[in-house]
Length: 487
Image (cartoon, rainbow, N blue to C red; front, side, top):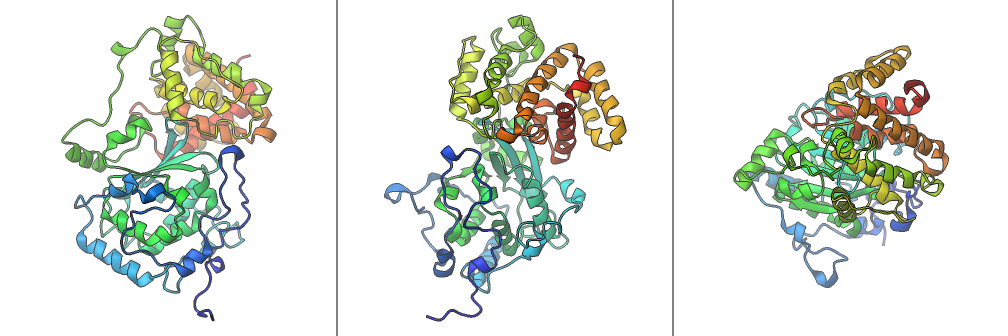
């Protein structure tokens, strides 16, 4: 059979896919998967199904996946919009056909072989919209990235190609570690929805490197729009990737996975959720009156020092003593990999009751996540609320002024108890950096992991514009430890 000359195989324009994975997993023991997220033959031979898309390959007995039944209509997206999208899908036809929407791959790193094209592009104006945000870790120790549809501007004036480059630029900083993605769907409408070509471009550009370490993809307040899009992309969505998707009908369902108080949830989304739940709150907070003398998670370091008679919180001492063993320090991906959220929660409960916990040799990632969780769940950050604005100004300083500025904040303005704990943590992290040739965790990598767990604002919110200076400040401390702390 002769091939249509207009029908180029996907490999001709999907430049990001390789048969050999250039980004090996940091933990090969848990991540066996093929080099491709989809089979080229599927793109050429299979058309999107028009019905019964609830069946998912790889599900035993043909059972329907519960979350695929979740999308509901809330009236946010007009019916004519969904019909228009369906027509756009129909016109695009088979994925890989000449009618399939395409993007200019030369504008993206790794697609054209010219890595210098997007370097230095200023995305400040897009970042200020707050569409994409990055914050601390979820309950499994994974970085959280959020996307909010309600913050998308009108599509007539918005440069979707440039926004796609911004998405890639943002994800590039975090995809080499385990991460979770939260998409707030409420607020997507006909005047701000991205074209199908953008969605296709997003899936095309975000190759296996971006998908491999994505552990959970939460779609909050889904509607029938999700059905239409999923139906179009189903032929290329692998069963493994599909299992990462979870539909969330109410915000409180997210509470088991992450701290909602620190999640940058748009007001429009919260208001919509209250209508759905008839005013039921999305989360509960432990107050000072409920703190127990043995408790260490969710309290202040002053509380721990008073009730445990220790300058360093015992849980920090336990985790760091274990992780300081050479075999642990040399573990590839230490602090990048996630751990079982159930097991971490069980250990938290034991520690808060005053029980002793012991780590086994294979518990490196569990101890690492427990340490990050402790720092993240402190009632007040190690780098106090009072220092938050000062930390944000760090990048504005000339390089020759940064040392004195940092010393002033750490030595003069940080409370004594916080200083002692921070110094203890940084001294340990310097040991991790010393073995970065084996564990792949440089000072910059550790700053990305620990920065948001050391510093946040009084309202507990965190935006992408905050992440940069916080990480830069943290990296500077790690790199210049011996010049900052009084030994």
